[in-house]
Image (cartoon, rainbow, N blue to C red):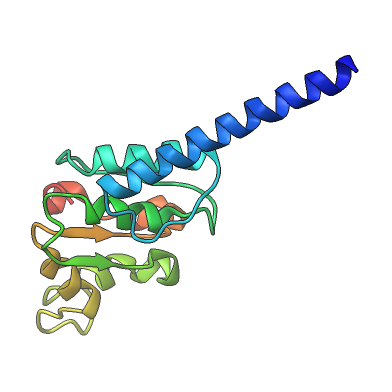
Amino acid sequence: MRNLLDLHQARAEVDTLRRRQRDARAALARRFDLCGAVYESEAMHALVAMATQVAHADVPVLITGPNGSGKEILADIIQANSAVRAGPYVKVNLGALPGELLEAELFGTEAGAFTGARALRRTAFATRFSTAGRGSASRPCAMRCCHSSQPNRAARGSA
């Protein structure tokens, strides 16, 4: 009999905890644009809540994690709730670019940058990055790029 009472009390506590979590997710969804994110875990709720808080700060944000973990969704949430949400939002999959072409594809090339470069060449990626202006540039898969292919900050100022 005692075990049944303990089981009933434990179920009631779990139900109360789940209801509180569901209410917290609903309150967050009412207050912020969550871009259709669907999640259940408390850890993901904490990340989404943090993304909505970070969105209000004018600071660079690095989101890391394995493939399929929701990095792009978090970037979307940050953009949707930021002060630059009305500006352009550029997404570039850096993992799809070969390391030796990364800098040229992202920033374009100047005349004389390499053999055969006779004029300024603006790539689609470079145009998209310059279009972002004071908007946001989401760079999924940035962590898969090798360090040598990262832009030279000293030559370009802050990237």
